[in-house]
Image (tube, rainbow, N blue to C red; front, side, top):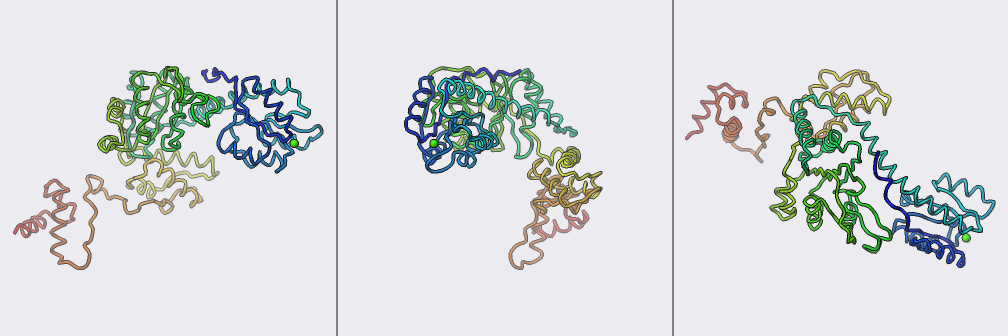
Length: 465
Ligand code: CA
């Protein structure tokens, strides 16, 4: 179903923690003979400093060490060692240690004295497990996403967006650029693009460019060869290789460093790239979808974004509507969140009251779908059910609740001048704003001010002088 398992994984970066000098030396020799990169640490302090700088593929861990117990070290550093295969070396009879090691997630253990052949075999098997484990993790995350997908598109506006996305996807042109405020569900549209494409059975990989530390970005995207930089003790595939045959979403593409933008442009134009420190040109067989909530054009003007990359990316821009512009989706989305929350919290809500519906419909949702989900989550905590009442809807910016008039084309909310000014001045200013907002249509301006057309005319005449 996918091509991820194909990567060769014959060598690994190994961290060996062992305090007996001779054993440390002989194990290191043996593993290096097999082509592995071995760092040997004689105590936990050295091991700690190593894993803080490098991510070993494999940890070969002695338990009785001069500055502590190996398993305490493992337990303390579990999150750092998440992708590392851990093998524990125990003396014969230390059953309790072996059990604890397994519980912590060690893959296997070796009894001392160590049989070198058994060690080599176990290490090679472990590395395969590690590759499979990482790929299986990717595949699982991908499939979970697929299953969870439930796209709400009741509104004309969003349906149209999905139609455009489908057409663009099927025409196989790329890259595709998704624009829209944050929280509008650009990743939902990106996954839709993947799902309707011929690449649907291949991986979909989401890279949030804003979340990756700057110095790791190039390697994360393009991969690196062994020795490319100090920490690169083994080669690694980047996103474009891992998603081979599938789709890569570059979310927050505006955050990619200026010098890397040239490399991305090259990939988009030539469909090839090099790993960091690599001489080989690799083919990029992926569809690239980029997304941003930033104004790339302005970034170009401010020399923060390359103009050539901007033009390359914006051949097929798709604008994702803000939630306030797809009002027919607000209630279906709210109900979907309630349904999902039911599974999570066990609380059952039959419906939203009419009043609650009105609140949701008249709010401007500056944080879009993400904000709606947060509001529903909070409401479920406040309410016991079975009806969800308006009072449980805690909106972030209550002042942005808009009246029907404002929704039609909003004048800026009135700011009261400091101190006391003649009423006539305020009146004059309000009439002027209303006329501007109404495009000089007197009937409309009168409606906005809540006065009759004659009253407005009277004032217009009065202020003419
Ligand atoms: Ca020892």
